[in-house]
Image (cartoon, rainbow, N blue to C red; front, side, top):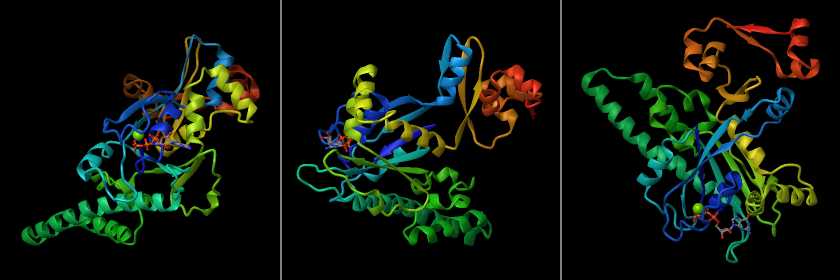
Length: 332
Ligand SMILES: Nc1nc2c(ncn2[C@@H]2O[C@H](COP(=O)(O)OP(=O)(O)OP(=O)(O)O)[C@@H](O)[C@H]2O)c(=O)[nH]1
Ligand SMILES: [Mg+2]
């Protein structure tokens, strides 16, 4: 499961990437001609896992993970598309969701224009999809008239998608289309779930309420540069600093948690003396498939799963008490 960090060039993508990962990728590198994407795996903070870990005292605690890819200089605000569409498509095709970073700080004297930047990239995504869509509709229509057969269901769905995008709307707001298995292979950019990160500088406070956020987009505001600097400090120092400014945890935690949800993932916990672990599973899948996330043998030989709800465990104190209260569930 991969999340692509996109945004207009110089919006602070690499800064946010560094804040998320604690790494030290060079900022402004894209402008200097470095085009390779930065990649990192980040653990998903989870206070429930921390609590379980303190209960069971295991040798090892393993967090769920999310992978981020920082894609350099996606679009230039003033000049429209800067990098070639093909290149962008190649990089974005495999990602499952997008984090769209928009600039909300002064840069070389230029005031922030978050709404304009947001709309620019949003239109680019839709525009890119429309080009692919038009070609495919054309081809399908020809096939159908020539052979008097063909996939009319697919054609109808593509036409519905076109209607939506011609109104300037992204497909992600229409789950029945965006998540349709028929269209999955196209990997439409505007169908990918998206979080907008308003990257606010220390010097300007812009009310987020002024931003018009398209449907089905989650907005997270954070101070990218400050968070990056904190993420690069030794943890104890960063914590002291945070206490000083009244922050309980890194602002990026919220972004990581939202990312995890955006991917449609929830955690299944396993506990024991050796390891307490959060396993990412797709929300809503049956117990047997969930067991498969832990080991494929467990899915094959699956009979039933005994489940304890986290809240019951915390309320009653231990597994025996949960069993005694008749609150263990059998699933599958
Ligand atoms: N004041 C301020 N400056 C920031 C902030 N975030 C990033 N910058 C500055 O903006 C410039 C660009 O930041 P990057 O993180 O390299 O932006 P980018 O989107 O990765 O840029 P490209 O990869 O070149 O497209 C750098 O000089 C950063 O120091 C912020 O929150 N506040
Ligand atoms: Mg960059």
